Length: 74
Image (cartoon, rainbow, N blue to C red):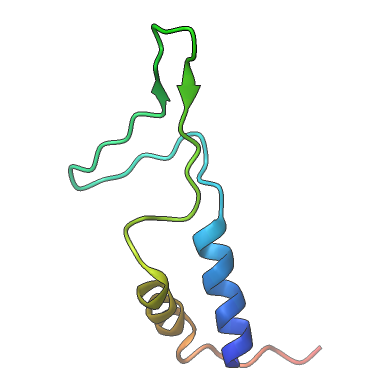
């Protein structure tokens, strides 16, 4: 993989809309619904992660792709 492909993967990872059943672990809490009992109930719809910044996500992607086998010939 080249740097451009890794950049694309990092950016897409950080912008991915988390699924409705997003359920963080390790004591991290997340409450999607808020202002329930007001005239303006709302829902948090996070994307990506706030656990990693860009450089950390890039390091993770580089770790993931290190040593990938070459694609099989068709």
